[in-house]
Length: 118
Ligand SMILES: [Zn+2]
Image 1 (cartoon, rainbow, N blue to C red):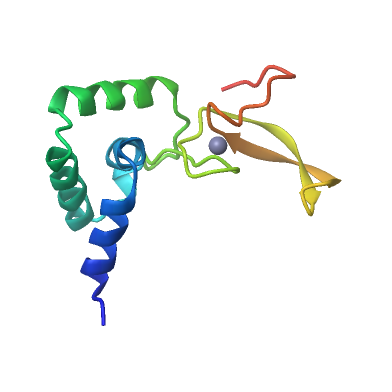
Image 2: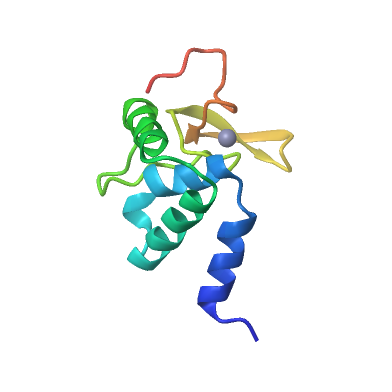
């Protein structure tokens, strides 16, 4: 039987480097100290430098949308940090528009029209 720590380590090992950089920067405020240590160890194992982490942190601080506690908001379509919030239709089965709601989007899923306000 796997322990929680083993499951966490497996999850970290299977994640791509960009996802780990998002976790250690944008979502750091929501992580346990043990998870931070495990992710930093994995990034070192992958030869990611402190400068690369600092660059990702600076980009995140510049572009992401945050909760008051300092954790980045997550895209409503994927697990990337959100870079904008705007009104979007909540859809039934992703097809039928039901009602507009305030929604977060990452760079990939950001609506192109109308221009979204940060
Ligand atoms: Zn997204």
